[in-house]
Image (cartoon, rainbow, N blue to C red; front, side):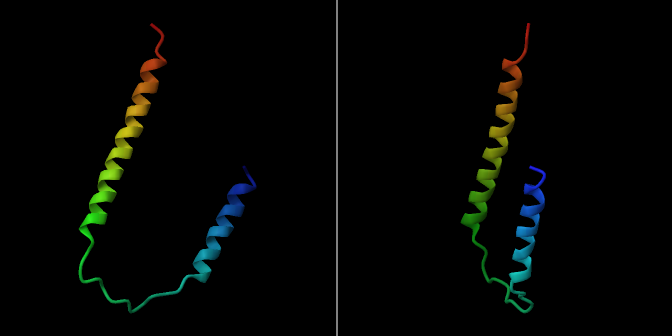
Length: 64
């Protein structure tokens, strides 16, 4: 694991070296509301699922 993290970091760092710089890109005229809505719905559901899982795990591990 200690060798994986530096290797992954250097691998991801090479992506920034090959990325094209866009300085004068035009701003989008419209934003896609459907994509933003889907993202927020999935984000809220994933957060709720995570906290539900943690609650369920904590509730079942109690010794009375």
